Amino acid sequence: MSRAERKVDHIRHALGHEREFHNHFDDVEIVHQSLARMDFNQLSIATQVGELKLSSPLFVNAMTGGGGKETEAINRDLALAAKETGISMAVGSQMSAIKDTEERSTYEVVRTVNPEGIIFANVGSEATLPQAREAISMIKADALQIHINTLQELIMPEGDRDFTKRLHNIQRIVDALDIPVIVKEVGYGMSKETARTLLSMGVRYLDVAGRGGTNFSKVENMRRNRPFASYDNWGIPTPSSVCEVSMIQDDFHVLASGGIRNGLDGAKALILGAKGFGMAGGLLKVLVKEGEEAVIDEINHIHKEVKMCMMLLNAPSPLELRGKPHVLFGQTKEWVEQRGMNSL
Image (cartoon, rainbow, N blue to C red; front, side, top):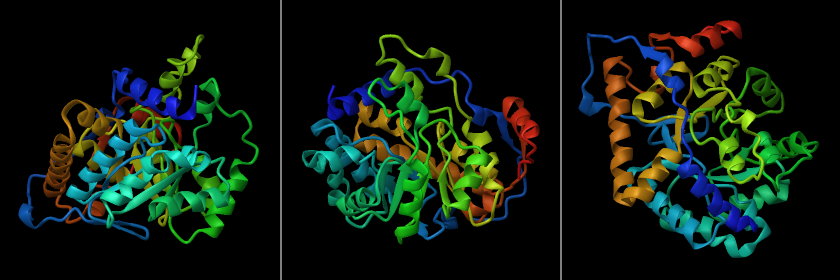
């Protein structure tokens, strides 16, 4: 199977596989505050994540590209929705276009239709510094995501098996680039141990991309004759992962993704310590089933949900949701306690 065919295969399986029965954001309850003191119509959801000035804490997370016209159409429509709603957007892994120039248009379309938008490039941790620079140049990116996906590669029939150079590659890229470098998981979450290692390398931006959204163990297992089904539930749920990494250092810029269903889930991630939140599979499903206008409507609705939470908690900005009163239940509470952490 070619790389382009695999990209389309991933989309088909990602849209089709079942999500977990329990979403761990339901383990987080916000403590209602009755005495509102702000004007809803004056609230702004604009925020800043390190060097990135964003009009919203929500961003379209990495999904696709490199799969011919089908993925080009998806990226074009998502970019148009991002432009219309003023949110940032990440493209899927650009390694396919770096290795096959005919696939470049499937990514370049994002900058073409959204010339002023905040766009994140994306490469795997196997990428060299020249490849990272090429990915950034391809879409005139404002930041670079480096995705780490060890388990996905191990389950993928044609996946990588040698990871001995990954930290070296990340270090070289972080040291050389003058734009934010976001190290991103792909649905397995990040531990505090991982975060500390990355911090020691100079990484300041993390997307924990925890368990709860698109499950690449299940996606890759669908492509195997004999699946490694025992790994279908591997990973750190997103709320627990945000707690793991958000208290390590104040200038660590944590992004949350993985299983965020709506603006309230996004607000919960901000309360736990994230500075922004990404959505991928949920927006893709809306796009495929209902079209671009429905995605725009969905994003606007999510923004209203975030503002409502800000209003209810008297938080004048998204960043000021951090640490607002909340209670943890179930597996998330047990995780935080056993891992020796206190939620904010």
